[in-house]
Length: 272
Image 1 (cartoon, helix red, strand yellow):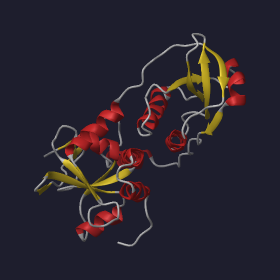
Image 2 (image 1 turned 30 degrees about the vertical axis):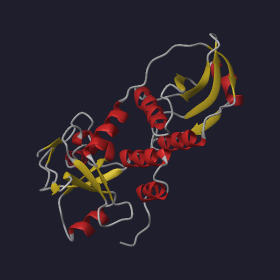
Image 3 (image 1 turned 45 degrees about the vertical axis):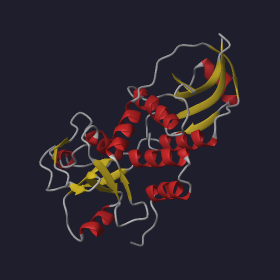
């Protein structure tokens, strides 16, 4: 199938070019978790009930996902029921089920079979919660973070629309002489702190780094600590929240109901 390579294609190609490169493999899983995937269903979803189509292979059962609707249609040869869900949600639904994941099979260069253990590992990696720590910084200096982390942070922040105005990364020394890195979010939106901290945690995990390598803090634009930090820090500007288009309330409610898995309070339920 001739089409423009997708981010998942590019990540898969990096793994294929250097199978022993753990950083490339972690990046593939990061792309898989963050991307929207089209899950092939046995029949149309009913409310929040999804029934994935299961294929029984010699190696065990799998469900199929595609990173483009056109790729799913190419595989099925016509119209077929599907649900569009983030990769992280699909991995969480498969966790502990003993079911693997077929990605873009027969329709793209990123075709890959992932065993059930991969879904368990990915879900565990995504659910690791950041730890809370206290420390008083006394000095900041230029960050010495690897490029893999800087790229991962930039990609995570690109999807954090409206959650904060910016983030600063700098080396830090605390009053107990401990040194490390600090990442400060400036003017984080109320309630966005856990999501932002988790984004940094995931960037560390998928960069192959120790989760304790970066301390995260949340400060207002007028905080005195920022004045000492800014001259040494690398800045990441987060995108502003998009302006919502006006829509009839009834139409908006119908659209939300038709997208299982999009409401964090009501995750989709699988029927096997």
